[in-house]
Amino acid sequence: MKFLDHLEEWLIASLMGAATFIIFVAVVHRYLAGLPIPVVQDFLIQINTSWAQELCIYMFVWMAKFGAAYGVRTGIHVGVDVLINRMNPRWRDRFIVFGLAAGALFTGIVGTLGASFVWSIGHTDQTSADMEIPMWLVYLAVPLGSYLMCFRFLQVMVHFIKTGALPKHDHSHVEGLDDELTAEEKGAKA
Image (cartoon, rainbow, N blue to C red; front, top):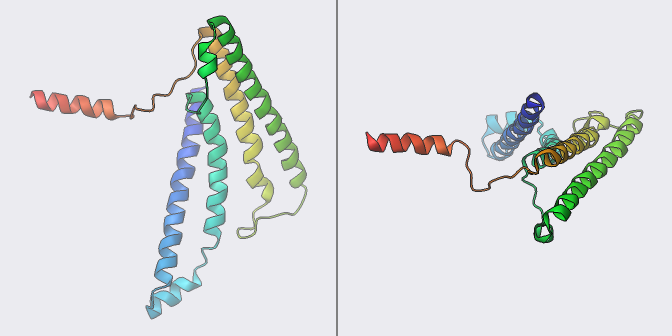
């Protein structure tokens, strides 16, 4: 499981970093190409960066699908649980398992419908407008991300049934800050 966790995190972080870099380069290119510097402007106008926006949109779609699965695994999705928390523990646990199972069922259905769509579009010559890549590669994010999210719902449900604990994300926690504060405290004591 750790391999899948790290692969998921690596994919999300890589897509986010690459999209940020590509957009930065495209914006700088557009700005510099508008400056009336004869040699620079002529050179930059010849470079086509129209594909950058399309690529970043596709990268954000993939990021969102895999980020949603990450959110289920880590418990960072927003949930309204006021009524659930007011129930007696026996009913509360049943409703939580029902909710997790419903999430798994829904994302499994979306994944299956997405896989069917990808299969059908894979037998066409449809390509993206600017990059001209096969559209089935773009839409592959739907079944892959949905099936991963379905797996994460089932994973959380099994863990909840075994332990009674749901993943909880502390929004006030900043990773690495504890180490930094400990180092500062040691420096202050010395």
